[in-house]
Image (cartoon, rainbow, N blue to C red):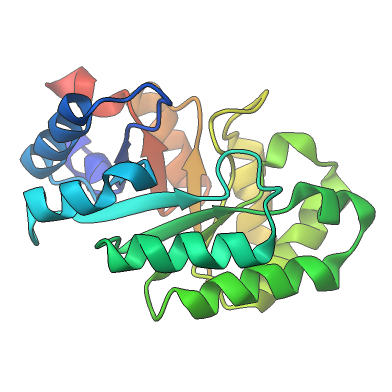
Length: 214
């Protein structure tokens, strides 16, 4: 797969807590230039970015980010607000405490509530894989598959670890056939990106790859 094909799967990302509008604008310009799948930006900038890019590129934003421990009601409000502001895709962080407690029903209901609030927009569910055991990851695959979400996503990029080939491969083997995978966190070379795609990733959350060809 050549670099152009890989970039078409990249969500060009700027989620720094200190990101300025000039940095967000640059990410939007680069995303359009290199035909990335989306730009993934903080909720604060969604309206301005949506007005800026028009229909030239899809806007993705994050919900319950990066820790995931806000209430379902807050996550639903965040998603609805982002969509009103022009977001095309939503990446939500799960309540990791529910998963650690084994409250799979509670976690399922949270994801389903956010999915319903997306009104048909794509929902990606961030499970922060580095924080969970193999057995817990398998349970997460089942819950996310049952939820109606569109993607399972490996990581926020703000925890102790990011995407791994092993996790992507595990997810591919245990999610429902119609669910897709977003690998994110620590993907800094085209070789790493290629390996994630070969393992089963459909999208890549990355901030570095565009810079390599710019």
